[in-house]
Length: 474
Image 1 (cartoon, rainbow, N blue to C red):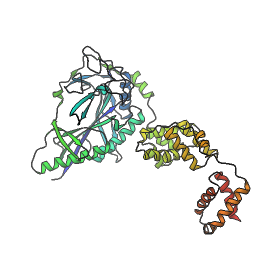
Image 2 (cartoon, rainbow, N blue to C red):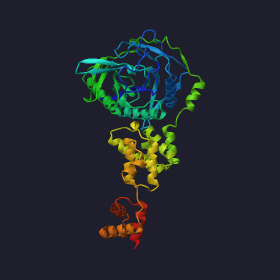
Image 3 (cartoon, one colour):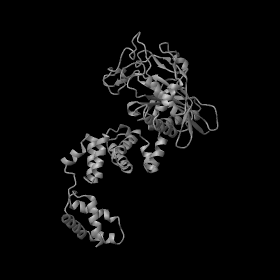
Image 4 (cartoon, rainbow, N blue to C red):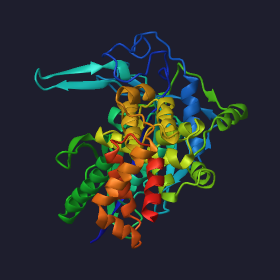
């Protein structure tokens, strides 16, 4: 019997608000353990929550971008369970009246993945396991960081589809500016629900859940492996148990943790310390006005206004940070084609060397633009420009000062010296000269390079080009 995969995702997105969802503590990543806490997020008796308006706005913005229906009235509920990383022994979440319902996102294949809902909740703390002392420590800094949980319908039929959805969702969230989208820091985590059923059947099989996968590749591998495990059980005549499993990406396998909880196990009830939230038309109009330009809108503008190719636009639109850099350079007077070439060439190369994603890019756009203006003005050549750009990226260097200190500025070469260097290169490379005169224009670049080397890279490339072409006509 042949089986098909039925998969749904629960994507937890940390919203990039400055303060937590129910208190004024910082949401900054990487602080000393238990320094971003207060009586509210550490669960002290009598401390009352106050809802962060910015979190509501970001959740509503996400819902509008995904075509969801925004609830006119949304409420919070208590999800009760005890765990060391949850000091209150309950999590404030939304079950009965989430902020968004419906909507969805199209995959590259054109298949539309439906959303069940988007709801808001607070994050829990982080357990730190120390194998040397055989102890577990708890950092409560993450308690109360605002989360959106984006819940899909069980519409995925492969791990690759789930990965494509997550990639597209992460890109959209990046452009919306609602999260920093750094999966390596836990800003996006996915719970994966997987079941299998005979091909052609409409009934859903018994599902298992794998929690907190923090890379897109891991999601694709986990879906495939768990589906294979379930299919093997069914073909052996054994039953699939509804349970929560832990995915080990190094081993490429999942391991049972506990039986899967249902909603009744959490004893949900309305949160008594927070009133209902009314989202009137004035609020939604404000959110709509704050919506940034989305990827498809940017793509059309990049092609029409900037004259970029489809390929270049597609690469840029994978990252809001790259688009901001491109537009920042153009806004500082760098021609669009040149700005795109340096962004997609040198900047991406430097990021790749450091093993970083575009979302991690930090560079002074004004200094980068100044380095490119030195090139455009003919004060430095392209090799020197690449060195200056790298210095701006790695050290935040002042490009003019860097070029002066390293002797990179081009010098005015006298006509006599220039003619002598060109004549010497032509005499030493007679074969290349013959090929050029026979119609092979590509050797011209080789001859330019030899001339620049003879002049120690100090000559203006435009002058060298002109002198070389004139000499080759003789």
